[in-house]
Length: 117
Image 1: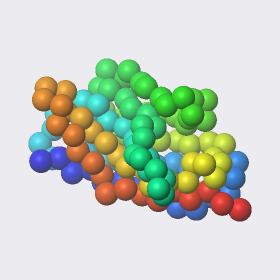
Image 2: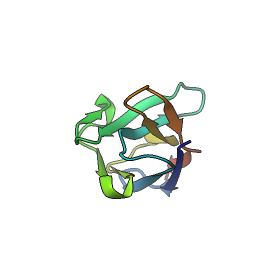
Image 3: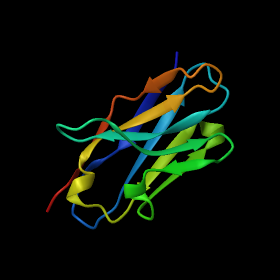
């Protein structure tokens, strides 16, 4: 069983920056595919960004150029650097991991990011 533990988040003013991190614990040998989704009030959970063990990265269009995902493979940790934040980025951000061989998905508990003046 994989456990994802997120840290970071909180409140930030529009135009500001925020960083998130997520560590995967359990019987794993690689990050496989890890990343972030988010869910705003009244909306469906949506992809933010993912990164694979080989370094392949996928961003949602609405974060390209503003958010950067990275990983420390040896520490089973992924990071999300968020810049130029706006109120529309307010959401609960969930860490995500998908196991390559069978597609099993794990989720973190979520961390709130609030962008407000």
